[in-house]
Image (cartoon, rainbow, N blue to C red; front, side):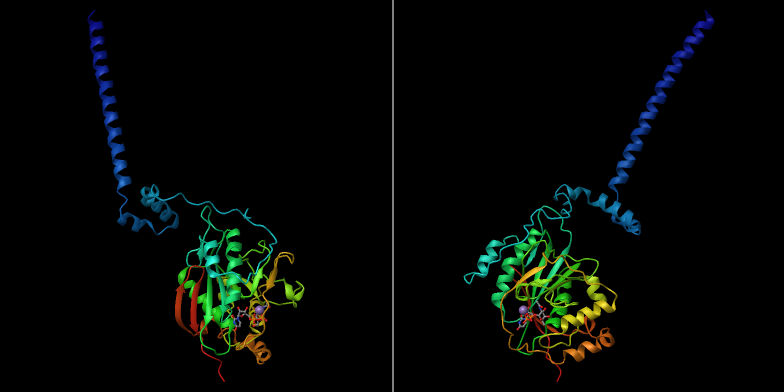
Length: 348
Ligand code: UD2
Ligand code: MN
């Protein structure tokens, strides 16, 4: 009997002991949980500063610190498909004499100050379209009319820049394009640049206005030349180079005043860098050139052969790094950024 009651007492105390242990565990769990919550809330700027040294950590910290905002911002866009579903292939082009700038603006409501990006996916490339220009307003209108919808069907993020040569000194297409590159980079870190004559309208939207890992020539053929490549090495009209490819060749030469040679000079620069020009298939890289005569102020450059001969010696110091100009205005018009520039005149 005595032994039994002793055992009974021990068991009863043991029960209280188990209860006590349970209670303590619950309290300890609550304490740990609330401690962690506090830590998560307390990711302060000071903490982020010490963590940002490592990129992966920076990402993690950014996720943490920006998470609450995400509730209010739209979800991240998915990448646009490899091939846009909006492409239509060969198009019938129209050049109506009744076309007005207002019509083109109304047709392109998604373009703001010359810039567009797809609303439902993240564009594969950000592209600056650079158009050298003086006194070709009609050609510019036709080009804007066709090019905006063309680029939108390709689901690109782009801005069209028109670089206007001020004054009536001899025209210099190449220098204007250098200016366009330098000015466009003040707006955005464009990864791809398209150097585009104002009078060339692409006929097929499978001719993609994106850059490759080699410089790309987009005009294999045009109406006036029976859609044949004019000559081997021809690099005029419309070309695409990445920001880095163009920097690597020091851009165009600034010294070609008047018609001709500047496109061959760029090809020589590309070849000196052991880069190789690529082209889209001939049935796709087709253009219509709006008919025109040689402009006054853009007479044939008789010095071009001599200049081409010295390119290998001078390209390092004649180009982007020596392009001096004075920007007179930058107007952000609905369909393009209009950069007017004084690029000087040829040295006599
Ligand atoms: C060819 C090339 C062009 C360039 C030029 C020689 C093709 C399709 N194009 O064009 O890329 O190498 O020979 O310099 O092969 N411009 C004006 N106003 C002017 C003069 C020129 O806006 O007063 C601009 C305009 O963008 C024009 C471009 O410069 O498209 C080239 O001039 P062009 O069209 O008179 O020369 P073209 O057709 O022989
Ligand atoms: Mn032309």
